[in-house]
Amino acid sequence: QEQLPRPAATRVFVVANQKGGVGKTTSTVNIAAALTQLGQRVLVIDLDPQGNASTALNIPHHQGTPSTYEVLVDGAAIVDVAQPCPDAAGLWVVPATIDLAGAEIELVSVVAREQRLKRALDAHPKVGTLEEAGSDRFDYVFIDCPPSLGLLTLNALVAGAEMLIPIQAEYYALEGLGQLLSTVDMVRAHLNPDLDVSTILLTMYDARTRLAAGVAAEVREHFGAQVIKSAIPRSVRVSEAPSYGQTVMTYDPGSPGALSYLEAAREIITRGAL
Ligand code: ADP
Ligand code: MG
Image (cartoon, rainbow, N blue to C red; front, top):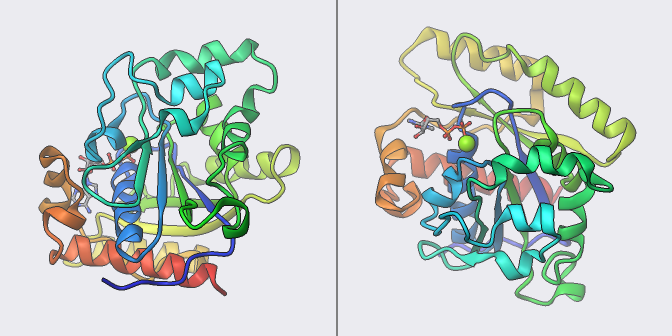
């Protein structure tokens, strides 16, 4: 298997778009799995109470499982709640349980409530440079956000340095992006000056329709070099993989969806090296 260079320090990506169903979770789990196939070690943090990323990565997340909730609300250490993904060596997951639905409200009265995830990540012994953290360090952290701009997503935006925004290639694609980007500006001004919208990914791209091509052209015109060259095609294989407890990377590695996620992961690695 192909081995690409590991980054100098852990890269933390926030996968966010307050619109639901645009491919945040699908992109998180498949890019994470693809990165491990390219020789990277990856931690996925499920920050959506629905726990779809946990399900897709075959991680138990019934109520009572130590999870993102314990990290955010009780101050549990990430290293104590992360579980290895059975489907990909080098991939670890902090699952989300339904308890996380209450965290949004419970956190309101907590000190530095928007810094909880950042503090937990900073305290992780396997996040940082290779010298600090050793060769089993996490090279990438992906935080899968819920479809809202509340306190959970805010915690992610404070904890991360790079943002990956999946955009579904359909008619209303750009609607709501203004709100997302002004939230990013607010976070940058007050909470996390390092936050960079580094990566835009076109998802569920249907090459047969003029509409998709038009939306893609518009997104590329607006975001330019931030847009990943490889658009992710709409494919049944991608959507059915989670029901087999697999990512499409192992469910059907030769399929167009898997190949384009692998290509996207390769591009993410290469750009970071620039
Ligand atoms: P989000 O996390 O943004 O809510 P999901 O990743 O859960 O979005 O995707 C929403 C739905 O679209 C899911 O049912 C998923 O299986 C499906 N889906 C995502 N990407 C693709 C794709 N490339 N081809 C076909 N279906 C997809
Ligand atoms: Mg999701």
